[in-house]
Image 1 (cartoon, one colour):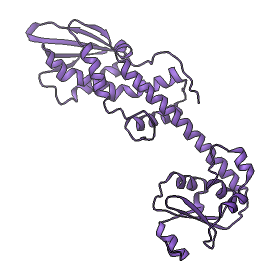
Image 2 (tube, rainbow, N blue to C red; image 1 turned 45 degrees about the vertical axis):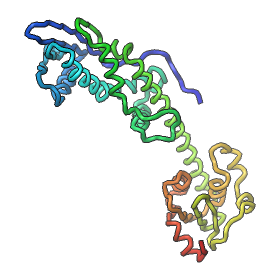
Image 3 (spheres, rainbow, N blue to C red; image 1 turned 180 degrees about the vertical axis):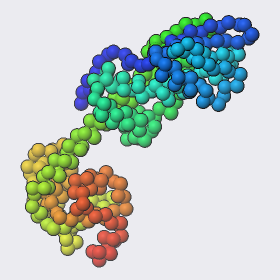
Image 4 (cartoon, helix red, strand yellow; image 1 turned 120 degrees about the horizontal axis):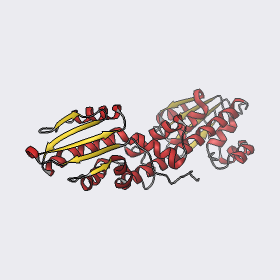
Length: 308
């Protein structure tokens, strides 16, 4: 599956930093210029919320700037400013960067799609989607930003923060791009899955039930039983499976379980399992909806009078 790409860099709110390392009174003054009053106020509020700001003076300067007065030593920069700016980028700018990457490099500009992909990207970065190969969570994002900041913030430096992000945060931006690409793939798969589920629902609405009730027993494998708890053999299931269904959906539909179930189109499906979150059980529920009744595994033996 190909993803649309374009090579342009992500855009982001610009912050211009002018550092004036005047040694007067043993202090260092940094003035940070923003593109809007809103951005300046956001950054000013962010800095003032930091707990570790002893000996640091923060004040609003010109209309779109924030001034930071620090003790004239590198420890103050490392102790306060570096983690503060890293937190600001990760906490306040990251979503804008991710959305920008979606639009400029993958051509996803619809806001609803962007929000869905952003949510998936968050879940991947937080390590919640462990099934995605070769992509772990982004728990070290702050360290990634701080490393670049430590090389960037030096005396007598005048620099555009936007340029810093685009040219000094290449590792961080590449990591974000990797997560965006994976999130887009997951989003496309989820869209295809939902379309597939809807097609099966539409099929069921016009299909007459071959059997009124089916019992699905799950332990290590899935077994199907009729309403009298007699096991349906593989040959019986193949005979009842609609060949047209397999022809139109050869990739997505499971031929051993889902295809026979949909072809039989029972009015009720009793599923017996101690693992209700199993992917196939979730799919059965999504397709058959209110027709599905979940039971613990032991209920099958009680209802069928079969000995485990």
